[in-house]
Length: 337
Image 1 (cartoon, helix red, strand yellow):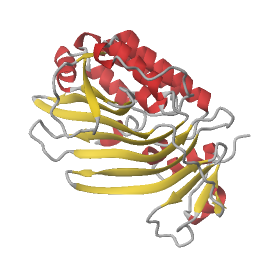
Image 2 (cartoon, helix red, strand yellow; image 1 turned 60 degrees about the vertical axis):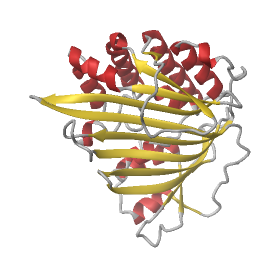
Image 3 (cartoon, one colour; image 1 turned 90 degrees about the horizontal axis):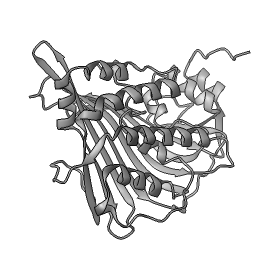
């Protein structure tokens, strides 16, 4: 059931600029102090501006898809990734530096299966340590590889969602996509201020929560523009989820369903006046005959600390990508000439 949703998990079409923003260059303006008086677009841009001020950030990110059989289903099937770690911006390195743990889980209701790995980037190479591996030769061994080898390892092990959650990329490339994604959202006027309380399980101490709802009149244009954006920036990835959304929103009742159930919340720390949590809950439904099958795409980002003093430590004992592939008996792609 999740074949059409797996890619959206790590590159969220509906709020990708927040995930990307964590990796962009530090900005230069002060934290906003007039959040209460801002309209939605100004609020989003101020959030973006505040996030880009930190050159080293400790962050936790959940990105998941929940699929329900019907509107009465209380035990949805799910697939998702959770990232917890440190990200360091550096214009002097080929790829972004980070030190994080990435977890991939899937299941139904309270039953789940999953994989976990530690990932580090020193700005040039990527290092992966698999947890709970059955192989004695790989246990407690860091695999050293290039960004290209890292991508190939994700494909060959069928763990692309896990690997894509911490994809090593060039800083300037991420920065450009982040800004372009935000511009699409602002241009479409996708969100409006929602001045009411939202009943969910998300909370944040010493922070004020601001809620936004999806503008029903602008959902179609936004999804269409984001489909073009994703196709352009990720040409080799499966875009079936975006095509599905683009097809679904042709019906007025489908757009109304999205607007009624979806929301974005941003928590602003009362002391620092900076964003400390961003939650985007996007709902749509697949309709088969008279059956409505709800789907929730959830992204929840917690900024644990701005301007972290932690550093990325390069593993001293490693094995090569080629040796690891032999141990795992993977058939690698032939080098391009």
